[in-house]
Amino acid sequence: MRLKELMILKSKQLWRLWCKALGEKTGKSNNEADLIAIIRSAILLTYVVTNGFIIAGVVKHWNDGERCSKCEHLEYQKNG
Image (cartoon, rainbow, N blue to C red):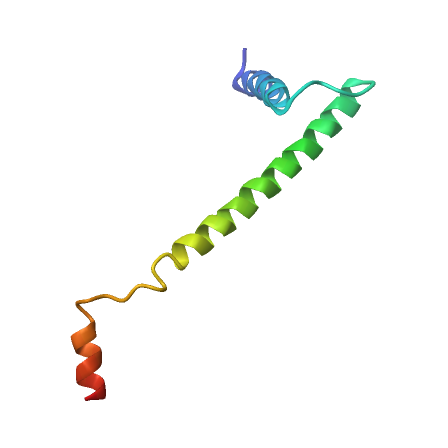
């Protein structure tokens, strides 16, 4: 087999596995089932992106309420 044929075969196999990982195959035809798998993939992608933003916000504001004891004397010197 040539490299291009091998890549097509692998991509079809990966698509099949991805679709099975998303859930039960639904649809009246293979084209409809592929469209449903694309929609499910888009929904999953939005979940991942949303969770990424939530985690980034939590990490950004992790220690906002706490004061560093090492920095208190520096603040005193600026004000005093």
